[in-house]
Length: 188
Ligand SMILES: [Zn+2]
Ligand SMILES: [Zn+2]
Image (cartoon, rainbow, N blue to C red; front, top):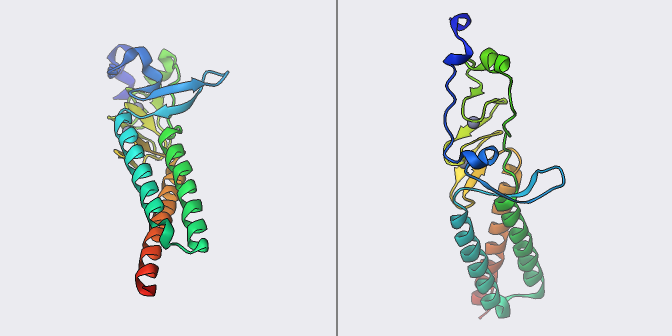
């Protein structure tokens, strides 16, 4: 079957944004000297911006409001958790999720691989184990877990650990606030 196929049978899937094809629907900014983007925003970056402002501001206001209820130890715990939450949240939203960058393949290579299930016709790459093409991002993402609306992009190999760290620090910050309120209610 495969031997009857020729390069002319190969129909690449069109990208929605061909002028910026290597990053699909994502946006890169601040490029390194080797031309690699240091920060990458997902297609729904507006959600990320909105959630950043909501989460970070609301939690900040909660900590400030509960400050007078906190013991010095709880205050230090909550502020450190919050700062680490902010750092990991921003890193998760801004770092490369694990994009499998398209490489230019020769016609022979395309002919050799295009019937392969691992070959992505949009990105023209041989997908690594666990790589999945995301329709929203329009890219192949290494070890893609899911596409997150909060971060406006995929959670893949490079940022999955950071995503989990963000959740842990977020919960620790909320615990600090709740324990302070509960402690103040018991004392009074
Ligand atoms: Zn792909
Ligand atoms: Zn995605």
